[in-house]
Length: 449
Image (cartoon, rainbow, N blue to C red; front, side, top):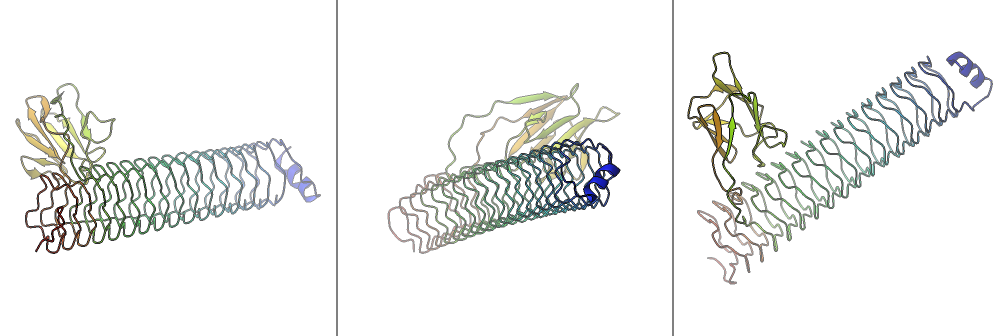
């Protein structure tokens, strides 16, 4: 059956075209609403602006098909194959895409409102500015997908895989994402107001300037994540794991951090006014010193340095970018270090590197908390403690509830603890230089004057 025969039979009132072979068929602007094309082969077919509302395409092969601006509203695409399909601005309102294959598909600005995409495979799919409001994405694979500026408000993302996905400025207000996998996801400026991320995995995620006001984050794993300047006001972070996270300048006003793990966390200049920190653990447990590591540059250049496990020399810290720097050798045999657009920069002999520079012999290289030395053709990582003290310098903890919190070894330089409740807290080894403790209830129950 070719495209012309299909359209003639459809015009005559026929609707059953199950199993039809329509590879590369020209069906631009075609009217096929409510047609039954179950298990049909439409791979590479052109369905530009086709009217397909209510169509039955379950099990159909639409790989590499052109469905730009097509109307697939209320369509049945259960288990359909849409890998590499072009669905730019397609209307999939209330479409059934349960367990559909959409890897590498282009869904830019597509309307997927209230669609059922549970269990679907959207690996590497492009959903930039797509409307996914109230969409069911439970158990969906969205790893490496692009969802920049997408609307996901009220969507269901429970146990979905969003690892390595990009969600710049995405709207996830009221989203339900319990136990979702968001490892290494990029959520810069995203809206997660009142979102439910209970026990979600956000290790090494980038959430700088995101809005998580009143979000449910109990038991969520933020280990190594960047939450700088993030708004977490009134959010619930009970028993959350924030070990080695960067929360500098974050707003945690009235947040509930009861029992949270805050070891080696950067909370400098964070706003924790009236926060609940009962039983929170800020202590830096003693760890064995890391072994001195050496990398020979002579036969390995280029050498990459960063937090990612794939680099030549891994420097694991929230203050180190995934691929922070590279060292290469030029035609004259000199070693050149280059900044790979890192967040916190590179310092050579205490001077910041602008783009790249030649490394002199004996150069002292500082990347985050790590110090390296170039000696001849060998790059040596200085032997150091694996953990850093929790940083609360200049943090605002006024009226915060820190009862029974473990603040041993924490740095509270110039922190504001006015009227904070520290009764029962462990302050052993904590630094309070220039801190404001006026009106604070101390561990023994006395009030600091």
